[in-house]
Length: 368
Image (cartoon, rainbow, N blue to C red; front, side, top):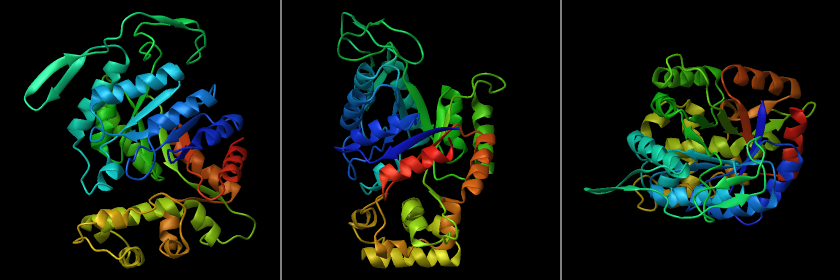
């Protein structure tokens, strides 16, 4: 199982990326949530200059945030700084849209946007539309220059044919954010990888694989691109309470994100257990808001995916720890990770929130 780290975009993330590279992690990711964190492309540019080997991922951008030409220019610019090390996750913008008080975009937009990014970053031409007007677009930089480094296990130097501004020669990896069959089908049709968040049920990953295979361009769905799981993890010490403060602090930010989504979505809230539904009610009271509040999204998403406050810690009931946290002894976690790997997950990515250096070292040691 490969391993990675994800964190909020912002100054200082490059130091964490360097440490992740030193510890042997395969990838380093930042979120793309403009109203919560800094700019992911600025942050990854700093990471690109500070690292040499580790892959750098955007987890994830959305057609609701940027036009395809603007996003492609940002991705290809990163690729010029770190050739062959860029992974671009694309989704419907669940968090990024909701923090604006809006809803995620449609799956059809996700597919066309991802296809356009893939074509543009590879130097190809694609459709661009604004309302009823459409045109064909591509990078228009001229000239070429030679990179002296190596990329993607291939030796340099190589010639970049899009000019000294962006790199359309070194490969960019694309992954689609998926929780259900529709997005997994998009990944199948585009030949892209998958990335999901807090999805720990091996049966759910098997279902995603079936949906991907059903839409894959090749008949049998062979040659599966990489799959990524973003989550959190806590190794229990001898005698430690599985539902104690240390476990909640390390993993509770993902459980809290589920409560926040349920607070916005009546059908999800109705599917919760009584304890979990009661936690949603307490969350709304703590935030001092209701769905009728025009600033509901501002109150609800405050400190989203950040370290839990003592008040929020009490919202993480035991069933949420079990469902949304990878918590256990070293042996228990190793067994769970093996099951995830068998179900199709290729890389496990954690977000350290309490003591990043210590949590990264613990994670590296767990799978060593």
